[in-house]
Length: 364
Image (cartoon, rainbow, N blue to C red; front, side, top):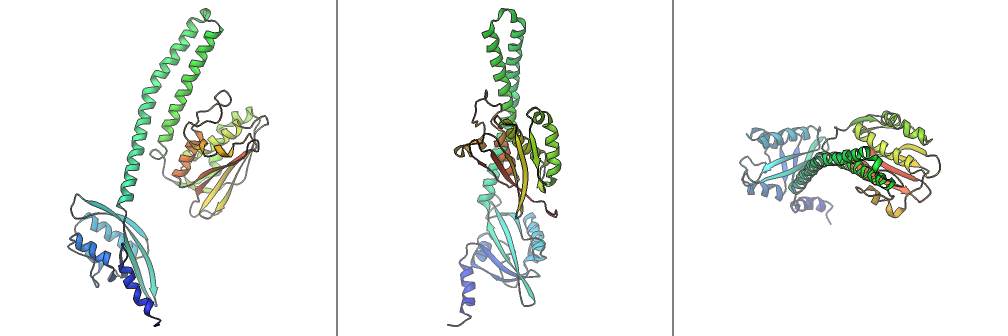
């Protein structure tokens, strides 16, 4: 068999790909296109079609007088110079009313002293639409939570105020049961208000968060420990820590994560004084941060359930809380592109770990 036969088969194989594919030289001249690339130009009546071998792709996109063409020209120029590997752009197909989104991805390679760039267009319209619908859904969720917070808090405040007024004005006429009933009602209204606030905070994680930037977790933890000084002192808790890294994150949201995890570790310590350890280890481009305690632990069957909104493993009489703290932690960690999980056994303590992206340019 001729050793060069596999090379001759490559163009035929590339022609079968459903992806628009071309090879350019470093100046942007088209050296090869596959069938999908050529058919796209024909089907969409592109006047300046970048589908002819010998045509300079960069020049014809730069000459076109549309915003899309200018976007493609700018992105392609960065790709050819090696400053960029991919970018997304919107393209009017068939008619102005039909818009599709494409991802252009490039891979440079060399043959001897010459440099080439393989360019592929992926149709990502479905993914883009899904992302748009998800953003709209999150926006509606936030609007609902905002309205619920405003419209429900006022009646709850009124209920609480009138119950307290009754208790104050008619205290001499109430027996022990009456006072106890009023206390339960006030406590229930206050807990409902806390749950509404928690729902509002949960809904705003994505839309109200700050841009991710290099954050020193040591400083974040210092702030949290100052905020929890009273709770730590009252519980006689011992908090140990290993050096923490600089990550890419939202400082305010990461403070919330540490505060929730440390509060839980103290709250669920059992009969012993709380002993908590915070540590971090590098894992590729991410850091795994762990908060470990020696408390009452969690049944493995419940490890996923505790990350759901308003899911509680204990009654309010046993342990206070809204049932939204760990759900909020998961939503924040996922917004940072990470994961969160639990390692625990009943009576053997709990370790909650989560990943955060390492900040670029910062040493371990």
